[in-house]
Length: 84
Image (cartoon, rainbow, N blue to C red; front, side):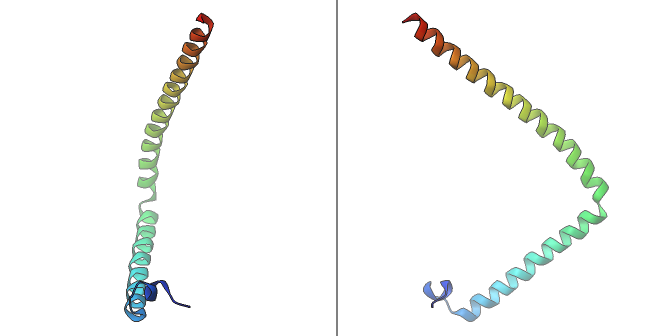
């Protein structure tokens, strides 16, 4: 059975080497990010709390606007159907 690399005309050895390098880089980034988050956790919580409030406000406003538009659209249809 052919691999995706072989089906694409690529040699398996370089693809495997680059895949290994890619996996090592991604793991280093993720582990490093985890270590940083662990040491800066109080700061991260403060940032999340601030942005969490902002996102909540935006979502509530969006929900109210959506509900008002939908209510107005239904009212307009109902009024148009009653006029006929």
